[in-house]
Length: 188
Image 1 (cartoon, one colour):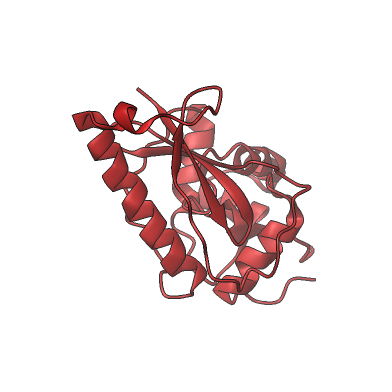
Image 2: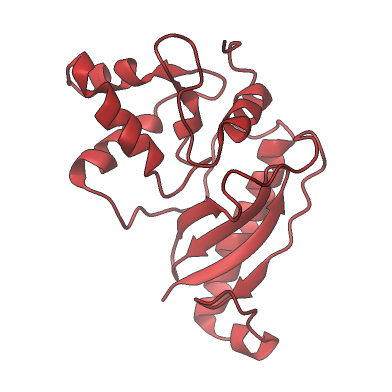
């Protein structure tokens, strides 16, 4: 079973999807057009379990053993996300599972996990690290754009060869804020 929660973060409202055992998706509710205040704001997280139509579930619906497991995953993610945005967490440990994607995309997403906090790689660097030619940079970029668990799988750490941000499914302003939070080298 899948559960959806809405959380407030310095980057706007997040839709967080979990299974009974792991976090399986994160996206920005208003992907590109919602620009909240400063990313330095204290993270205010409100977890609201919702169904597939984003209707809030009643408290009675939360009393199953599965919901207790899911609740611990969400609680861990809330704590880690708050620590990340306060600059005290560099690696997420919340259990997560990628349930979608092609084998190629999954290889790219796995490679993203090796990019350290505060560092960036180009799409070409990532392609080469996977044993691909430089011409595969666009395919790597497309895989980054399809990342189902941004922030935890750090696709924001991949930039264009010319020094520009490249792309980001949640909007370039979010990518810039994430890189600034991590103290990544200045991007043109």
